[in-house]
Length: 565
Image (cartoon, rainbow, N blue to C red; front, top):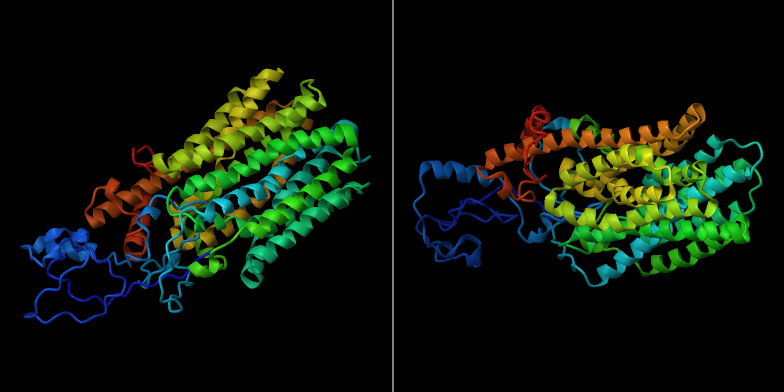
């Protein structure tokens, strides 16, 4: 989602005598320069450039200073467009997009979609709270009744495998059911985006409510495995996608500070929902049968999702948001390919964890109730860990935090899960790995903004969703095939751990690119890297193109730098 904000105008007037720092903060400096004998105008905001500037005093400026001023002045932004607190708080699925009127010096990386002529007003700053917290709670609850409800499929999978519910179905067939739901949710995201643009957020989400409810009710009457493919797999995934896609960008529209924290709270709903429904689904299957378990879950999903959909409010019209088409030119950026590889490997490991832990508990001799508890504890870890990951990513660096947490998920899988032969150790692994295993979902939005820039975030995320569809579809079938071929879960455990390690390695190289890019920007504007304002250099296409190229050349050499990126 991309709001149209006022464009900067490259026709600048001569700087006023008092503006000795060289930063031009007016987005539309088209007024004529005052005659040389006219008195210098007094700057209204004396705090912007210092007291001397407010009094119209003209400091002595040497030739070198004039050159520096000319370089820095290329960064031309409208001060009213940007909230200073937004600099370090670009959150999940960043809706705020800054447009510029500068020429793109790097044609191969230009999307050609930056038409800025249709917007000439400044959107108001985000309320930074207020009803935004209600929206955050609603989105978290929707996540609980979509992704969280889907996470309980591990309990259903364990039941299917233990009881042979559908005669003739293989473990691979059952594995595809859970994978289909995630893949269909990601595959339909472009369609849901178009529906949101054409019909609005609430109608699109209500369509998702109807599809998700219908999927669960219809699944209760399934007596063939292909019935389960269509209901609990495809239809549930479509409903989940139509709820997830319109709602995921709402929370950032309401916040300017602690945006990543708010996103962490909304994302933790999926973990807490998985915790709740892993307990509930297991109990209902044991006491009421699988048919009534489906029906009760369908009724609950309908009531809760409908209520939250009616309460949630987007600010699309206020901020001038629009949904962009895919920008396939991003595939020509090596750093973006590294981001896609991070998502690819992360999903190969993550989906195995959410669907296999309950069945692994059965394999080591635990009962059905204990297996359901293992799945619940993994989701508990996700619910607890995600807000903390979002909170600390703003302080330690988004790419840094993502790489560290992803690496820990791999280490925990290789060290703890491999040796988890008793109930207590498996509970410990489920909780601690749950805290870090879903790092991708918490940080993908902010990390994407770091990689492609704010104005390309909506298009980049659409490409990310489509790219990770395949690993989401095939990861659990791969895991079960490894178990079937080797007779134990050791191969699956090693596969999961190495996938997380590979994802962390992609982020490590991506970190080197970002460090090289930041250092080049610092050189161009003659500032220390830690003092760079990323928003103020966002729109200078020449600087961005040059710094991206330098970062690519040094992505391996700089990957061990100490910068906060």
